[in-house]
Image (cartoon, rainbow, N blue to C red; front, side, top):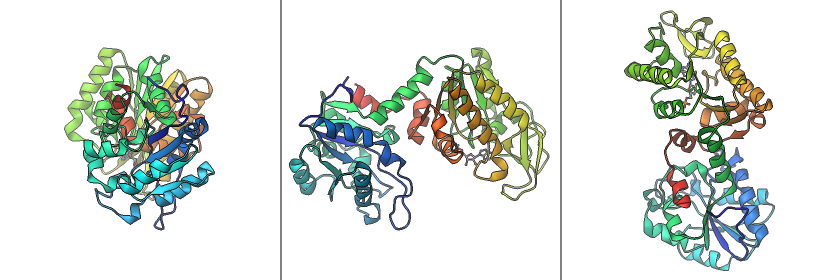
Length: 396
Ligand code: AMP
């Protein structure tokens, strides 16, 4: 298997799938360039070797049609600033302009192709379209973890045209290595912290993690379903009635596998789902009628923190409460802090999945975590134990 460090890009045109799907304001200005910054090491290595880079990405959801509001041109300009050099732009990702610009590309130069999803063939995983993309480069690099769970033309199908010249970029490799440290052969004890709104979106994650972790902490809205499944009174909390049996099954499975399961014992409750609601604290299994649990309480925080601090490996996906509203933020802040503290004591920590990543960024703790994943949906599927097609296509 080729790696970034061992491969020389000298004289090669690298076709690189990147994730330039950055958020923009109404005027197209980039509001958060985390994803663009994340690909810079890969691009720089290619250029430093004496190669050139042809970058392809999607932006937004143009649904297979050209939509000028979703052009990658302004993002290419932003990237030019990050790389500190001019960046060429092709007005389509395939066709004469892309072919001509790719053909003329010289070592040290960067070409950004227009939004892949202007063509319906991208998301359809069309082989002919993938072949047209492949025609542009000599070697394929996949550095787009965020779309690795999609078998699209540029993320997966294109790899077959580079049987002996395909590799992961630095970002992709870092994501793969981090998950490996957690799910491969983790330092024990390994504790997984899973939160977020619903059990339904995390069933497979929970099932998969029970197979590998020593302790499992459940928080967030999904914890209510577990509390109710054990006979608790959950008031007006978010509960998935149809998943009470599933929750019981997970509790049983944890018991059978010797996994220590932590479910909140107390909660911050509110009389409305609102920032200015009346709030109180109570036992997690005694939420009064009409009240809802919107955060974990102080006793749960203490118990979860103790478990986190004795762990050598930590995985965190999903907030402990409605952290977007200040009165229900404390649980998520405390867990983020505990994960950061355990990391400073030597544990390896991976935070993955949209909202927990947003939380560690919001609380200014991202640099105290061993690895903060860049892929929401992709990370979730990875944690479910699925083989991501974008990874398999390069590896196989
Ligand atoms: P997810 O996308 O499944 O990871 O869920 C994240 C969302 O769960 C966030 O927007 C939180 O506000 C929400 N959430 C967390 N705890 C609760 C709760 N106790 N009740 C309702 N929603 C919650």
